[in-house]
Length: 126
Image (cartoon, rainbow, N blue to C red; front, side, top):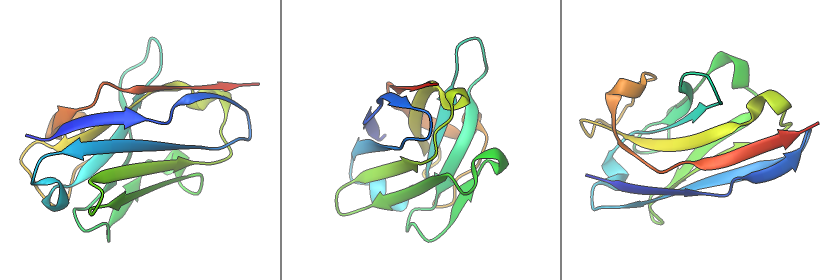
């Protein structure tokens, strides 16, 4: 199992940027695909982006392409989410997660992830 801790959330004005970090513990981090999800109040958790174990393959929710970038540094056991041109509708709790079966190439569905962080709040003001 991988333990995950997110950080980097906060309050930002529309048009601003934030970089979220997800620090992982566990020897298997570098072999596991990772994902970012978000959940706004009253809404279901939604897929944001995922990244393969090597970092060479990434995938994004269509609505977020071009504004969000997922990356990872396996030497630091950390996955990142760079968020630019933020909009009020990006307000949510953001979670990182590790593929539940330890697969290198993750999926977009939340039920395919088995380890979750506690989340970090991102609030975008107008």
